[in-house]
Image (cartoon, rainbow, N blue to C red):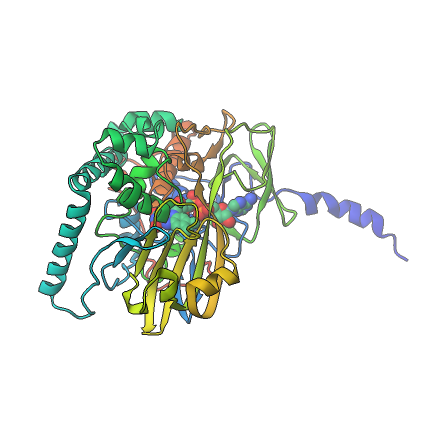
Length: 491
Ligand SMILES: Cc1cc2nc3c(=O)[nH]c(=O)nc-3n(C[C@H](O)[C@H](O)[C@H](O)COP(=O)(O)OP(=O)(O)OC[C@H]3O[C@@H](n4cnc5c(N)ncnc54)[C@H](O)[C@@H]3O)c2cc1C
């Protein structure tokens, strides 16, 4: 037998050698935060070392993902984009991604577990005239005004004030500092105070009556964050903004934003390669992956919430404890059972069933995603706990297909909030998702990522692109339209 051992020993150092140079910038996570970080780094600099993005799953996008039910794709995670989400809006425009055609207006019903305490009017049939749709909208506004009165206007002012402050994050570089802590970032825009008190406290001070808070506001926070009005005021205001008009989504799936940005940034994508540990090696970090590979990285950006992932840091990093709120998204192809709602016909059930904060209600919301026919619909149910088959068989009279997804969806918000550092070790280990403790959304991920990109550039000799005054003035994005399958496999 040939003496194999010496050959193996000779080969061993090269087999174990780390990949990449100690100049690489490595990003852990390919969701909108990781993809935006890669994108802004590329766009704001003249010379960038190799960018590596690690994704433990087989597809990019993270909490932006679609699910196929009854042959159609639907958003399973992050679904709606606010018209004033300027980064996402411009990403979509520059990547050539079109908005999805959305059909009917929502027909909202607020369910207290026994009856619908409030419903808007059933929408006019598809294809109705502009006038009929407009009149329907006006009638609904009057109904809302009759029930909630001036509180509606006060709620709107509360949201507009938050949005005005949030818009400061799109200011040009001359009038917007680079922030190295979330507290500083929020104090600069005037939003920090909202993270220190609950939404309920803020709204009482803003003059909203208790019926509006326990009904309208509560159903919105339950739909958008799966939580009650005891969430922090900022998360609450962001959630309320998610009930305004003009909301939209990307045709074919919001995950394409992440895929397009990563492609544009020319990042080396390591799909299905999770990072198990990040060790400080002096001038660089050693990232060990679950594939047994090691990567030397000058800069490491963590672009995933650290609360439920098991990355070992050496030396350890210290971050305040944070719980993720789990949202169970259950997709059903079938038909709701009118008896469960005390109604005689399924056609009387509102198309968006929103719920109040009462202990016996097993779901946060049920919405119609598609109507194949009068007895064949696709629904999305959000709940805080898994809905078992027995319960689903009470809520639905027909159930042909059921898909369940358990999301570690967003932080469990409380007040006062505290924030993990953006720079985790005082060196070049950055954490984008600390900003999620302020509010979780596609846009907040992009805003936090843009600041992290600027922070990295300000602390390394990377060369800021000349003439960059406004972050949006110099976006260089190749058209991504038509390249639908980049980095994508089935959920
Ligand atoms: C049900 C639901 C509904 C929502 N609705 C909306 C909405 O309507 N509008 C809106 O704007 N936002 C919404 N959100 C929130 C929004 O989806 C998130 O805030 C946003 O997508 C988070 O992006 P991210 O990149 O920060 O994190 P993620 O999308 O979670 O990305 C992190 C990535 O890191 C990867 N990863 C984790 N650990 C490792 C590791 N060790 N190694 C390598 N990779 C790793 C993960 O697999 C993941 O792909 C919703 C979220 C959920 C779940």
